[in-house]
Length: 483
Image 1 (cartoon, rainbow, N blue to C red):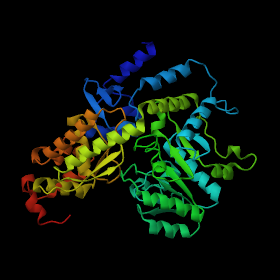
Image 2 (cartoon, rainbow, N blue to C red):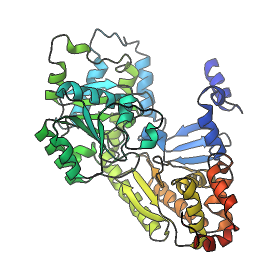
Image 3 (spheres, one colour):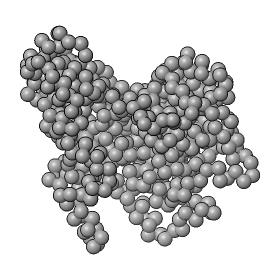
Image 4 (cartoon, rainbow, N blue to C red):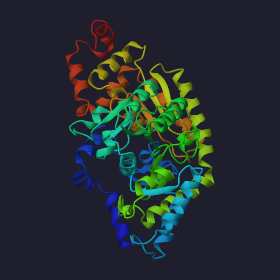
């Protein structure tokens, strides 16, 4: 190992990372108080190892970027190859050979629906490009989006975010953005009839709610947009490239959007990359004038490493037959979760498609657990899900995700290389955790009390302190109080 590598290795194992001081210390403090403070030093496939050598099953996968698994050797090998070739990079005034290769591959996978590819650096940026193109193409200002949607954290993207909590203290946002209820065709027809909508932006499976939109809604949305001169933007940043059981979830539903955005999986988890696939008529309307080539340009978007990461990732996905594997493993996982739900009354429903599943919780019929859930819910509607998330991490060594603000659910994005046995093991670990929560001594409040209650769950503690009972007497208290 080089001297540089040795220095990195020493820092990985240090007791106090500089990131705790310099990079978003409030966020790190929140994780640490919740007990999510493992120091990870190695990663491979669907697993992470901490400094004590303990292995974790990573079903968060970097927020979905590691669909091929962490540190895939073929992706790393391709990056090493191109670094050794001393190729010109970011010459700006010349065509990007590697970008051309990646664009051709993406257009081929999209079955000829699109004609051009515009590269970007992140999912947020790709959605910004699509929103901007829609305005330039139609000359209109207004956008429609869905309740529960998430399209990124930049200015335009957050303006079409379906969670008011995420726009807090950031108003005013992009003007004239109108929310529509999920699968509400009547509302969509009403808004499009005004004739001022530049585009409707939709995730075929919502990243923060896990809800898969109805095929009928998506197909009629396309028809209505075409009828009223609006564009349809499909955000496949999280669903695209095999995760939901097809290369692209929207195309699999028979929908032909005007633009489609991609990122996450495309990067192989190695180098940031995103893409906007654009229909030919849209491209011509945006770039039709001579000299309009600089309407959009991103300095790092077509850098060699990003393009190679994308190409190598597609090679790996095709070799794995990722869409078919995702469909098969997704059914295995969902069936296992449905089986767990039949025995755990706190599970309300399962949402999602393929290897993108969300478990929603409800209040139990067991009095002691129901009492704790009600008390926690009075402070934060997602507090119970947070306790499950913490317990899965700390005790089961499984990394999951709370999908969105106030969402009382647990989301998983398993890499396609996750073994069948590991998916079943996750379902078993979830059942074990939920079963333990029926005991007041190891319930959700006790779980949060080990860490997060010292800070993030302060509201829960205050409610508990005001309640005139010990937890075993919670049911009697709840009979007299409405939350």
